[in-house]
Length: 396
Image 1 (spheres, rainbow, N blue to C red):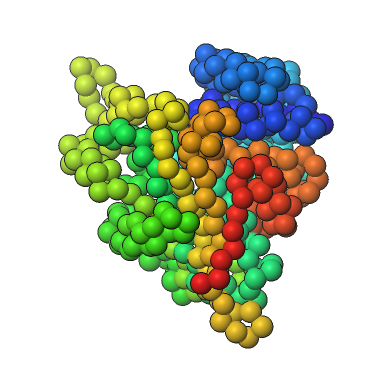
Image 2: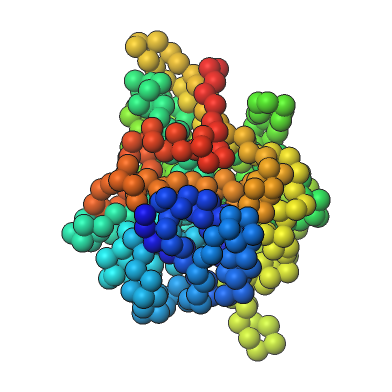
C-alpha cells in the first residue's frame, strides 16, 4: 500500500483520482493537487460519493519547484502522477529528483512557445534518474501509452518482426456542441495544427497539417470514418524500440464540422500561440480561445457513442506474413456512469492509474527513464481487462 500524489484536476485527473480510489490495496492514500483547489474539492466529493473514500486536496503551482517539493515532502508519496499541462513536465521531474520520488506522466514535454512534440528533453533525464535509483515512466495514457503496450505485446507474442504500424484513433462520439475539444483545447489544437510526420524506411517524412486522409472501417458497428495523418509522440519511441519497423504512422478521425470550424479559427488567427497586443495587454489567442470554448469536463453527460483506438500491424511470424489489429472500444456513456467522465479522459486516466500500479507493485521496476514499450506488456494488458479497457486481437 502506497501514497500517491496526483497533480492536475482536469478531466484526466478526475478519472485518475476515481480509479486510484477504487484500488485501495495499492493506493492507500491519495492527494489531489492543482492550481484551482475548488476543482480538486469537486473531484474529491465525487470520489467520496462513488467509492466511499476520502482523498486529500491541496493548492499547488506546478511551475513552482519549491512549492511542489514542499508538498511532496509534507505528504510523502511513493509516486507522483503528473496529469497537469505538458509544459510542466520538466519542473515536476526536477522536483521528483530533488525529493526522491518516482514519476509518471501521460504526455511528453513541449515548450510553451512552440508546438513541438519530442522526447529529447525528458530522455535527457536518463542518467539523473538512474543515479538516484528512481524510475520515470513517460506517456502512460492511451496514445501514447496503451498503444505502445499493444505494440510490445504484439512483438512479444504475435510477430517475429513488425514491419508496418498504423495507430488509428477514432472518436465516434457526439457531444452535440457546435465546436468543442474532448481534452484541454490549447493542447488539443496545438497538436492538430502542427505538421504531420511519419516514419518511412529509416527517416522522418513531413506532410502539411491534416493533408493526408484515408477511410477506415472500424469494428463492432462503428463503421467507416475519415482518418487524417498526424504526428504523435509515441512514434518517436516506437521506431527505436520495436524490431524491424519500416513504416510507422498515426491517424485520427475528425468530422467535417470539426475541421470546418478549425479552419475558420485558423484563418482568423485564433489558433496562434504568439502573443498579441490587446488593450495594452499581451494575450495568446489560443489561450483566449481555450477560455471561451466548452470545458472538456462538461461534455461528460452530453457525449454519446464510443471510441476505438488501436494498432494495425503487418509483419512476419515463423517466416509467414501476418497482419493483426489490437484495439479497445470504450463507451462514453459507460465511462460517465462509472466515474462521471467522457471516454477520452477515461481512456487516458485508466492507463495512468495502471502504470502507477505496475510501478508500486514492482511489476514494472527500473532505474532511469522508460517508455511504455520497454517494459513487460503482459501484466499491464491483464489490468486493462480488469479496469475498464478490454482489448481485442483480430486477424486481418
